[in-house]
Length: 320
Image 1 (spheres, rainbow, N blue to C red):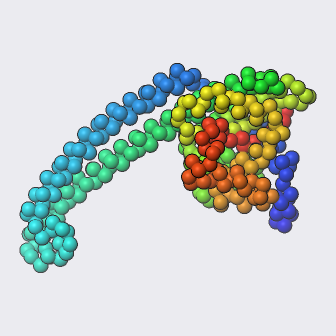
Image 2 (tube, rainbow, N blue to C red):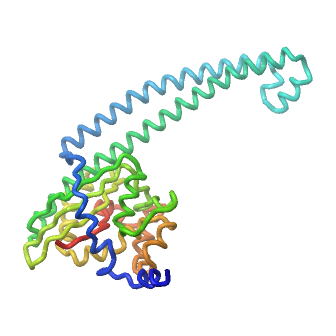
């Protein structure tokens, strides 16, 4: 155990598994085709229509149930005026006739059923809104895959950028386990909290994409590498993903030595406090600023929150 602690304390950019990892080599899945701008607009419009139809249906149901509940409550209040405020209601009724008490319970059960249906309808409406949010973000995350492939044209040092793998997951747990595997082959999550990742103060959830790119530079020998990016945007304004986005990433891809320094802190910066101890104490000081930014509950305080490139985080690297 002492040896393991010593080893983690000596972690450097060169020895850290996230910056010299074979893990990305064995994952060559492509789960989707990235949408074009036109397809993105069309897909989001479809999600908006689906939500609008469901909301109209559920709004009507909620309105009907609210009216039914109001009528039932007024009827119950008229029959049992001592229960209108509910305070000490049962105490009063138990002192009266058994029949009146049973009648109150029966009619209150009807009101309770309507309350239950109303709560279910409102909960379903919120779930559909959440569904739309997740799906729209998923569309943007897939769209960014296409956008970042265009970065090669903005820097003469880059020869080509290709997709090695593009992974999506049906739930947050599966995505989080994949991130843990990229942090190091020997790291095993033991608690649910180990799988909690936050990026720019927002959850890393099932809308995210784990993208591995095959980047080839024109210059020196051995200038081909794989880089894995966590794509987890919450920025849904398309003006942020125009020319500046590609240029910013072109500069990063053209300088893999600088990219590796960012990767060194990548997963550490978004990991839950529970997982930090397993990632190595050597990262604590050099990654402090990056982690503070990523974990912030109010990310808008940070200038980088307004930069679209901040929603893609390099998390693993392998020279080829």
